[in-house]
Image (cartoon, rainbow, N blue to C red; front, side, top):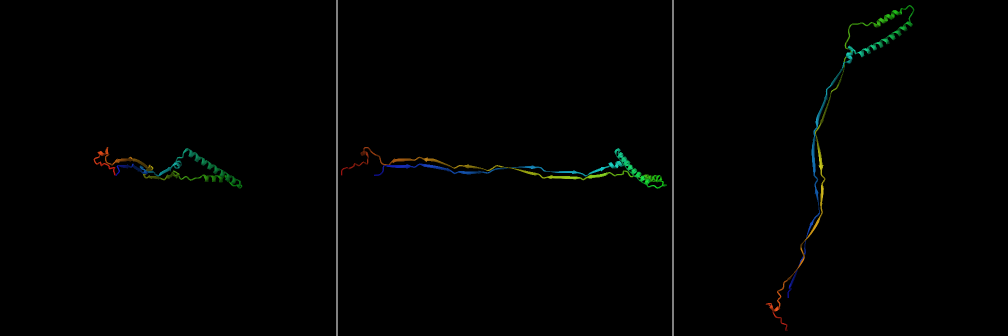
Length: 202
């Protein structure tokens, strides 16, 4: 006696796809802009300056009206001082004079001697030379080198995170396969070509 039915089970098949989490780093970029500033050379020169003032020299030859008035005023003032001193001296001498002494003649002789100025006809013109001054020369040199300007524009680095993922997919459904593996069943049994009557007598 052998089994007539074969039962076969088909298991379920599941495919699992796993994606791991990851973090990606994006490098920052940098832009550089270079600009040039031109320098230069600057030279400023001022030559020596000569100043000649001939005002006093010209006034000694041909004085101006203001200077003439000033000179005459000084001479008058000096003459008044001299006359005052002379009169004071003569008054003192008169107080000390002795009887019979001729003071008038002495005063006249003294006055004549003071006013006597020998005139030789020589004079130096101009009496004063010109006043000469000068301003020293100057030279300023300014040199400026060329300049290079660097302008950096840096972008910050970025991080990109990708989360993990699990994907499940059923590739085969579960099943039960029942298969009859016996021979054919004849009805009635006697129609079976290999039928053998069963002997029930013993």
